[in-house]
Image (cartoon, rainbow over all chains, first blue to last red):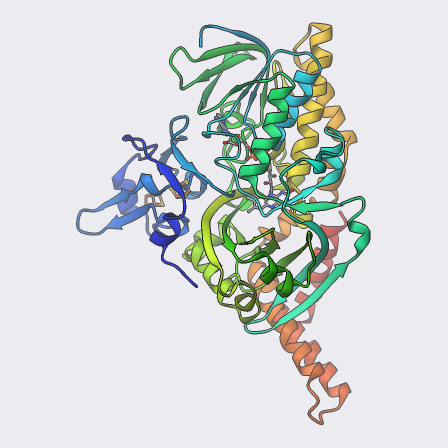
Length: 94
Length: 434
Ligand SMILES: Cc1cc2nc3c(=O)[nH]c(=O)nc-3n(C[C@H](O)[C@H](O)[C@H](O)COP(=O)(O)OP(=O)(O)OC[C@H]3O[C@@H](n4cnc5c(N)ncnc54)[C@H](O)[C@@H]3O)c2cc1C
Ligand code: SF4
Ligand code: SF4
């Protein structure tokens, strides 16, 4: 009964803003961040490091607004605010 | 939103904020209740168990109309081995009447609860994010929202913005929670026919059952839960963020491994995943609680780390803190003084309540979780306990005395030796009885 993360995120209703509420402050910091833990701890796989482009991509449309990345990025390199009022996730059950 | 004045503004329509708004509106204050979600509950998840006592203090016999799932008559604790389980449980029909607690789902519950505050006269302002507190010197005088012309002024702002509490942070109540002060929980709501749930969990009608899970969290400090709703199950697992960051494991993979456990798999078999969700839980406890009041503001619920992780109580602490803050605001309104001098009464009231007492009792638990003993406590021990009991129950001609020795050896080894077993035992005892 295990599902992929895409299938899981599909169960949540999103209203994505066209502007990201999550911003990597400095890609150079990501480049020197050895473990890049955001690639793992995020419950909806928002962050992904790209070796060739040397950058962390941010799929903010999938964010479930838990807040983990804000406090767990070892360099506090993620600027984190809530999506605009009424945007972002809306749960059906909760 | 032209420049309107309120007696009080509440930020966040979770249990804490709604309880505060309800209390104040009922007390005749002009109250605004601001929530960033499309409606109260839209952004919120929990296990979850709702308790009678603290809500009843606010709304007598609320359970006769509130959207609740099942009345909990049985609570189980499962210590998971790799393919086995050590079980402990308690069932008692006295928990039915009066009901002690229920399972619930936040989308329905939070909306219903907020509707009570609205009916009492609180002005709902939803789909609105408070981006900043308005201040004059040290005094909080209102909020800035992300609406156009979105400044609102009030004598008191009640900060009930949940675990992330960006507003608390802006007041420097906390610099930022450390990864060992919060856990991340991921959860699934799994649909099954009502009768199937009742058969699998040995329940009738509206009876409900909760199972707390220890073990199989990949060596991270954490707990799982499996709760029965009417026609869904709530299954989740929460792990400390400091451990999660170190392990480089995806949170939903921990959930997957719990779902695959043979004892869990049979309970959820055939179910359809209706929703995936995730949320932080405050775990810092007593020593992480920030100052609770200042000039023109008070802070309640998760924003103040008011969660008793050992007993998975949070909503009830939130409700009581919201009520106490609301009552303090009413007194301040009568006096016409909104400074720390008057609002400090909220601090005193929290100190005199179960919130302070319970959190103080378990203040040592946080140190236990952050101490680097996670692997032992949440992985090796559960496995060793399962193996020890397997050996004890297996009738294979080995003498009971010998078996007892083997069992003790397994537990000792899990702890890393005799002294460590003793040390962990003492530490654990102190943490629970501080
Ligand atoms: C997985 C999990 C399981 C749990 N299990 C249980 C359980 O079984 N029993 C129990 O009693 N407790 C449980 N808890 C804890 C419980 O959910 C919390 O303690 C409780 O919800 C805290 O209430 P609150 O009102 O303080 O915060 P919240 O419920 O988080 O409410 C805060 C509200 O503020 C809003 N908000 C935040 N910032 C802003 C802003 N800037 N502007 C506008 N709105 C804003 C949010 O959208 C939210 O609605 C659990 C928690 C989790 C995550
Ligand atoms: S953890 Fe922080 S610094 Fe490291 S890669 Fe991710 S965002 Fe960049
Ligand atoms: S807030 Fe949570 S879900 Fe969103 S990006 Fe950060 S870790 Fe991922």
